[in-house]
Amino acid sequence: LHRFQSHQVRITLLDIHKESLTALQRLIQVLNVENYIEHIECVDILAWSLPPSPQFDLIVSETMKAMLEQEPQVAIFSHLVPALKETGCLIPESIQIKAWLSAAGNKTHVDIYLADIFTLSQETAVLLNQGEEGCLSGQVSIPEYPAVYHDLKFTTDIQVYDQHSLHTGNCSLNIPKKILQAKPEPGSELHFEYKRGKHPGFRFNYVTQHYDLDTWLPNNKELSERGLPFLKRVWRAGHLLRQGGDVANTVLKKEFNLFFEVSQVVNKPLSDLMALTTAEKEFVDFERDLLPDEMSYEDIKEKLMMLLEQKHQDN
Image 1: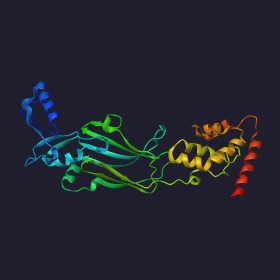
Image 2: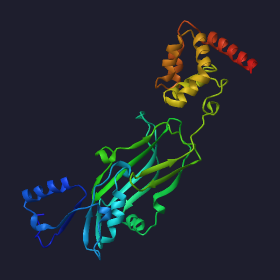
Image 3: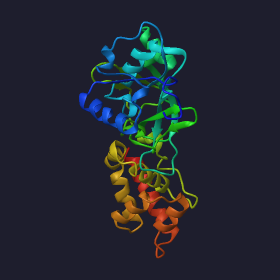
Image 4: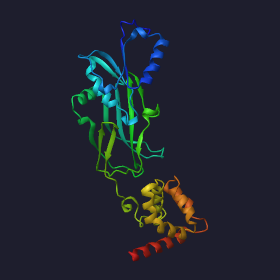
């Protein structure tokens, strides 16, 4: 403030908490900036009477949490924006909420961007002040995606002013919100709505994907490069087990007998087979590590083919 003359900068300070304003008064005295203060008032900003005409060049409010939840940032900006001059600016300038598909816990997979679902800016604040609430709700199309992306993730990006911005990892306001094991159905829509009021926040509605393992797993008859059945299915099932949650439960329920039968054929404990399938290995490495040296490929192939014929007869 001391870079300006007191007649160049006039400040109005509002807060609902008396204790905060008491501390602010002491800070003003310590900094010796009393001459810059136009007005201080303890008031609920949403009940504060606006001046008859726009008079502010800047309106600054940080009354928010990540995802614009719980705190009234949206309500405050939409209430105060008529007091902003045409050439004025809200700070922060914009708050963007983005939706993603995320493979949580798997650092090798980059999040899949879905859409910007809401931006709080001077433009949307004006619309909300005028009663236009269409920007608060909408839908996002869910694309086809690899099974490992089973979480929905929402990020908060804040454009504070000019080149100054805050993104994921910068502070608590940018902590992503996740819906774990959401597994939205590809081809469906994620519906969202920002609810205003005493406890503001987003509400989401989406269709959860139902897993058909036969569409994800290779057929038992699909042969490896060395001519062995079952192994590609077992290897792929192990990859699904790494996801945890409902996917892993479905795999264990429907594929456990196959794991056990293959472990018997290759003469390995079931626990060793499970460890190999859930390791991050390419299929050729999995097949090499799985087969014991003392057994020939022909012996294993014969036994696996017999198992394949038996399953065919059972079906």
